[in-house]
Image (cartoon, rainbow, N blue to C red; front, side, top):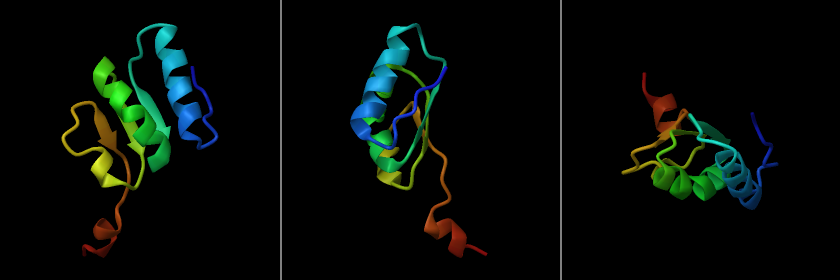
Length: 79
């Protein structure tokens, strides 16, 4: 099942809450740093693996369940 957050953090958080209330989530995916930032704290509390397609690496530091899927500019400079 999925929900479209329209890249709006309040909608991302609402969608995550709605989906997790319907039953346990195996995992979640967010797109954009702002939507990911809204969902990470709740995913961490609930122990739901979260794949964030987001450029802000700080959102994932020290997190147990949040994982970044993004090629950072630093990766593009590596040869």
